[in-house]
Length: 548
Image (tube, rainbow, N blue to C red; front, side):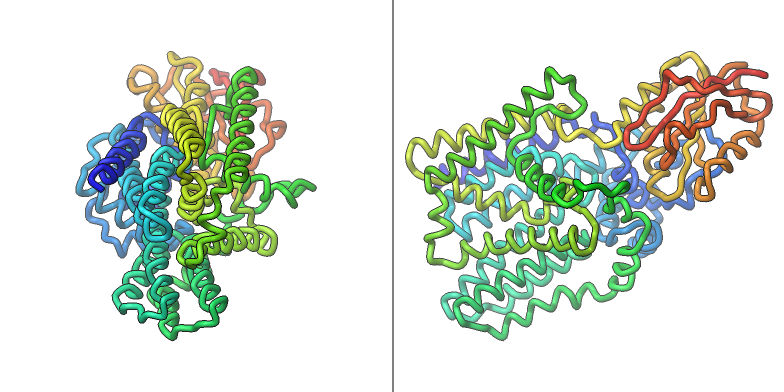
């Protein structure tokens, strides 16, 4: 048994290394900027909108407002975001205790709390596997999670994914214990129900999609009772998490209909919308075990990497089926093991209901598969837990591939940051010796966050603001970009030399709709450079400006 726990300690240590390496190296992207704004005690009302500001002002924009209370953060999140407030309050307390001295400290400081949650989840998944199956399966589940590229990716995001992942793992562990008591016709101690209810209530206050996991837990418990023709009145405790979340219900309803959730709806509906969610879900499963460099790579790298990934997945499925290792699930008479499978299937069913009935394709973002990932992890561990030599070799290969994949994630070769802030900044800094201005059109706070993610990366490349001035600005595009062009022409005179590079970031604008010429400030005539036109989900275009 001592050796067993030494293995567990080694697994957790490996998980910590994989999650802590390179935390500060990757750029903050749109969603992480949104985390930063609220967690620092700021709001979008503090942003310098509809005017030009020097890039050095970023240090003030991202400074910690330590006087902000959790109640004030909750109010800001309610009005300017589409999330429950608990995670942002915890992050604010963390940053306040840790301190954020410079912009360079921000990324590592925020991501650290997610990494801690990721490491803790590896320990929690061990106890889930142990409770549902056996200590050995718990150990395998912890190892799978430690090297999972999906889990490492979530742990290096300054977002609220590893905390609900941890809470789901803990809630499932308590649920299994409750199920064992019900199965043996024993009374469930009150404290187990209270612990389960509190964990799930905290989960609801952390992420809305935790609701999927809660409903699935209730469904799995109820299904087990109906199948065995039992019903315990203590199941009524299942309503307690919902009661503890009542104060936020009005905000939840308002958030569901917010404009910011429209990205779940296909921008241009096509014939692929019907089966795309299925393909995206399968892709999510694949990325839980293997992720090689296929994003933004040359074909000679991406194609072989994709072929190897596909071959590995086909091999793994064949191994699991041919070895018959799912005996643990199909033939084990205990419902405590089957309940994990039922939970996972119910969450998947909920995802497809949201996609096909509510019309919001949440499968398009792989991160949302966190809602059932603990179940998948434990079930896969059960499938790999055979005692013969062949099974041990299979497990060794799976763990080795996972470790290699996690290294790709840490190196930013897999699970790359959306919108590629570092690449955008490099493109914008095409001529470091010339003054630079970036104009960003915005309609929602998400557009502002996107522009700020680019600004932080440009600031790294242009630290000497006195030598090569750099300016930034956000202009309201709600009533059309023609007003943005007019506002640029009305700007006060900029303290620059005769030449200036102007980049226009225009969410919602087609590339061909950029005007060939813009007037900037007083007397600067800006001509479009057709050779410097890019699109990464949104377009950004270079204009070369000079005196008329």
